[in-house]
Image 1 (cartoon, each protein chain N blue to C red):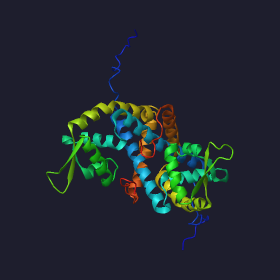
Image 2 (tube, rainbow over the protein chains, first blue to last red; image 1 turned 90 degrees about the vertical axis):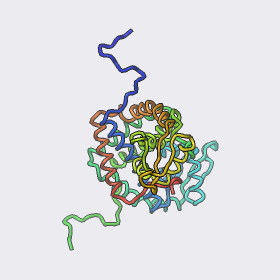
Image 3 (cartoon, chains in turn red, purple; image 1 turned 120 degrees about the vertical axis):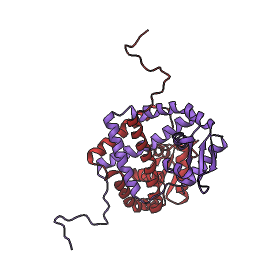
Image 4 (cartoon, rainbow over the protein chains, first blue to last red; image 1 turned 90 degrees about the horizontal axis):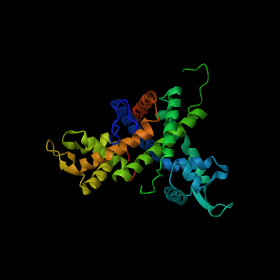
Length: 172
Length: 172
């Protein structure tokens, strides 16, 4: 049996955060919560879209024919397929998106942004980009922004290694 | 009228993000979304609490008599008062919190964590802190964590200067 030279904490003893870690976690957690509602608020006011609705349209606009398989769109919008289905249904009622079976493989469903969807996205983008600049890009130096990206990528790697899936429409 | 030596872009031309800014924004936005559901998932699984329910209990535990005015609790949990009221009602049904008029000023309502609430919080804290460590604290160096805190504080300052309020219970 290995005996360490200096005693380690018992394995059942939680490793609490020290004061500096606690302060960093509080600032960071508060920022992520408040940033999300600031952007939700801006998008609702200026575009009548939720954050995830806006980014679903934005990701569709980057694809050929403004079309994407629902499963891929769920992936790139960080949504579960069931949550995305509800969301796309709402956008369909508003005439911004339609759904069709994938002509290449009928087991899949495609989401296709309509002309009306594209017009709304194009009209909404300037105000949203201005808000992202105002809140996130402009307050940071180029170096700070690079560090933020690096930290984000490291955290994303850890999340990917875990076993949690995105929540469904009613966070079940 | 002031005439700049080099022409500035017309005021109506949006300042789009450059490639590096766009990549940083995408990584950062994706991280904030995925981190939130990873933590929601961990808390639901290990404690039967949502993220905001856990932090409402945690903030109550830091106050004398585990008591706080609802309006202050809304402030420190980054929730609107109406959202917090719904949430505290749910915790009350489970016997984790109760509400009473503030004895010092009956116009205010206090939220008071019960012994059962404190027991659940104490039982839940080690697994949650371990997850926060695993996903956010441990993948970053001490310097990177400091930078993340600084970036968070700068973004929070910008958000505070804006005019958006936290959304209500149904994100209305």
